[in-house]
Length: 556
Image (spheres, one colour):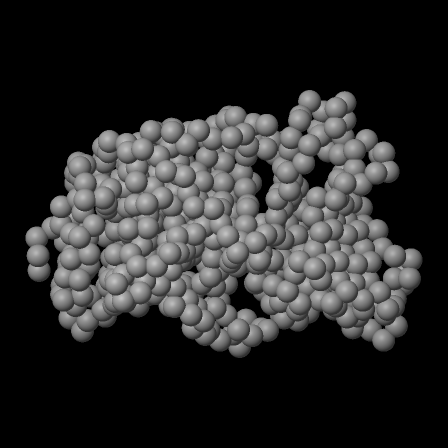
């Protein structure tokens, strides 16, 4: 195997790694094009921020658990309205908006309801399909969830955010409106109907986070928000959770950012890695580090690693330091001992453990990066020692005290986070899945990057803010890195009988731009290179702004 490749100027150390990079001129990102236009409702999402008000519905947990599993009585100040034709008919559980749990809802029937993986304990559900399971149901379903009045005085520009799981149907309409000071005039913040949704199933709206930015009229004191679902009988459903109102973020200064490149799941496609690195250099030539989130080779054979070394050597002139690598499952399929295959990865990663900490420096400040990984032969896929888990908890605590956003990389997703992680065979790949979720749930400044699933960026759960019982109310953010290999997706109505299919060849990755008060993540499509290793594709598919809730930043 060739000696370690040499890269652009930087300094690497053992244990805690530091990269010092001379910033190059900033280039603007390529704007999103037709792909984003086709799903404009799914492009921008901004969880986090200076929170003025939040409602989780979890205050109703005792009422639900001690009762029938649902209630139509909301938290203090909230109300449920239904069309008079729905009174006393249809299934009582689902007569208008119901407060319940995902388990109770799924027990009625799955039909993709279980995909609402980001939900936290009690949720609000409007379900025309289940309401219609009695012969006396009316021909239409019309219900509105009305919030308690929220004080907005003294604010100019605000952002409403909520988790959403929406399944559309012909003739079905979902709206969110805001009304100020009981004026009777409602401003529409969001509307889904047949003009902007895909009939029957729209992956961009499943397990999604919705945000709407709006201006507060001068002298307005209070706002009331309304979620309304109107549908013909026996249509589909809408579920929401974790409603929050925050001050909208102000603009950023691109000259004051620390940028990172992110790639994953190369799996025998070194030509895609080479092309993707070139595309990343075009849009973020000033980057301060490269994160490689596992499955860099197909089996872990020595000749496969040589291909990756050759690619990295060819890109050494423009690849930033440090290169931070996490181990995946494909690094250890070559039929050799676990120890020899692990050590081959560690030689590339330039570490003596599969886990470690890096601190990347740049114009936007220091960016801590924590790497987690498999320590023992499988099964399970990710066996972890007490030492690694305790270290992880301690380092998150340390950076939280510093009020820093922390990037965490591990190849496998944690259960009920990003796309596909609600599927049983992805749900518990980490031996200590629940423990890791609990640790992360206490750190709202944590951003978890995972690969492995190869699922589309276009899905609603490409990125999620996952909240954990007893954790911080903002939870943590988990993001799917995409893949430099084939794309997968799920097919089927019910989780128990789900199947996966390969949909197309892809070559995708991320850029992270870290500022003092937020991280801006762009999901990028590099396209499949031609025989000469080139194409004209270098596009932004999704954009996510993750505000640091531990600092007070610039707001509009």
